[in-house]
Length: 268
Ligand SMILES: *Cc1c(COP(=O)(O)O)cnc(C)c1O
Image (cartoon, rainbow, N blue to C red; front, side):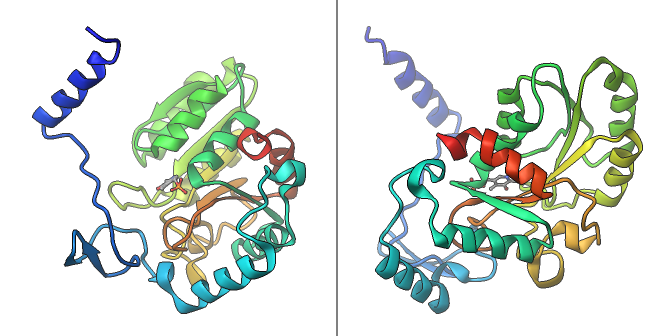
């Protein structure tokens, strides 16, 4: 017996159950048509909705940036890693989202891991849609707050959970996907906002799949419903419709400033 035998057995169990994830290797740029194992195939499973991942303007901008600034800052942003390019990107993302400020992270996943624990802790409660993305669930667990799921897209269930539980906690957060990543349905954000307002609870939406899809010019779910200034925190990602990589948090400048001080993936 070796101490990794259990892993071999788990992997075999996955294979036997048909749940083993065989990851394809792409030998061409991302796009509608791909080369996989030397074969040309039609692609129905990327998030490159707008074809930006191999767009000539983005390729040219990436070349220009590396010519002028190198391939990376080689430090976290908080030490000696924030470049003029980062500041410009955050300024433009804030304008795009129509908010006071924005901060970028290594990914959407880390944006959630950074944001939720910065906003709530052990004495607090999170009301979370049952079908929220894995990174919201992990961020919520990491915060140490009590997690209370409400039924998917069910504002009545949300309000019931708030009525039953809110008074036992110091602060609260409501968090939902914008466009749900598995089913593609859309959160009833105007109704969720009314509940957040009624109980004076922070409202956070993860719009990873709404960007580039909903709203004017692809600004996302907040723009789609005309809720500018009403949703406290908008999380986003550049790895879906934007075709690149990186997480976004957009909102009021006080929250963005707090994330620069307390968002652990940003700091470390
Ligand atoms: C994909 C996704 C993320 C993670 O974004 P990455 O930038 O790929 O890490 C977070 N939240 C939701 C809802 C997503 O669909």
